[in-house]
Image (cartoon, rainbow, N blue to C red; front, side, top):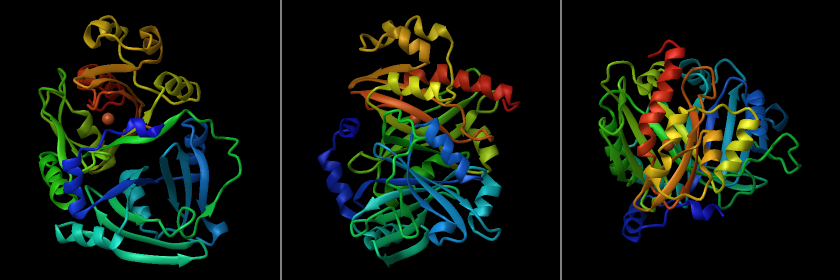
Length: 379
Ligand code: FE2
C-alpha cells in the first residue's frame, strides 16, 4: 500500500546513487524530548503510533529512556536523557524538543561512512558493530545541518530495534491508528544564505540531486518570504527540502523557527497517507491541532485544481488544501507546532500523482502561519 506513495524510481539517477551511497529507506527519526514517556502518549493517542520498543532503566540502559513508535512504515524514537551529563541535555537546552537524528538504512555502513566523510562530511561516530543475543547491529554517524545527525544503520543481521531495546509485541491499547503510512519528505530550516551550501553538501557528500527549487517570488506574502530547494536521493525515495529565510517586511516563519530552535534544524516531517480525509478526521478528533485557511480558499478551488475525487465540503470542513501539477494533484494539511516552542510541526499529505510540494498553497498557508506568529508576538 505504502509503495504507491513513493515516486517511481528514475533509473539514470539510481545508477548515479549506486555509485557511492545507496540508501534503502529512512530508518527512523529520533526526537530528543523533555519527557519521552508523556510525549509517547501524544504520539500514540493523538497521532496514532503504536509503541513497539523501549529502552531505559528496566532494560539496563542507565542514562536515557527511549520509546520506539511505529505507524505504517514510519518509525519515530523519542528519547529523554536521564542524567545531567548526558550529551543530549545540551541539545534539549539549546533547541527544546526536536529532531536529533534522521537515520538512514544502508546495506554497508562502513562504505556509507567512508564515502561521505571522504567527500567532506563531519564524522560523529566511526562504523561500530554491536553484537548481542539478537544479532549484530551496525551504525556510523555523520553530521548534517545544525546539531542534526544522519546515522547510517545496517540492520540485516539484527532482530528488534537496536541493542538495549526490548521489543513490545503486546497490543497497544492507547494507540489509535490514523492510517499514516510513510515519510514523504523531511524539511530542514537553515540560516540566512545557507541554503545553497547545504544543497551542495547533499549533492557532493550524499550524492543527492536538486529535485525542485522555489524562490522568494513563489513563497512570499505581503510580510514574509523564504527560499526553498528540494534535494532527493538517487532513487528519489528520500526528499529533503531545505529552506532559508528571505527578506520581507516582517519576520518570516523560518526566522521565527531559527530564533526559537536556536539554530538550524528539522522544521517539518510530511507523513503520507492514502486517505487524507479519514486520517485528518481522526487526528483532529484525537486532539491534533491544524492550521486553518480562510473559507474563501475553497471558493475557487475547483477552478484552480480541476476535477478531484474528494468532496470539497469535506476538505473545507477539515481544512485540507489541494494543489495540482503536471503529474496529478495532491492534498495536504499542516499541524501547528507540536511543542511549546514554535518549531517542529507535521504535514499530512496524500499524493494523487502529483510529485510537487503544494506551491499553489504557499500563499494561503503562510498567511495562516503569520496569523499564528502574530498571536505569539513573533511577526
Ligand atoms: Fe512539506
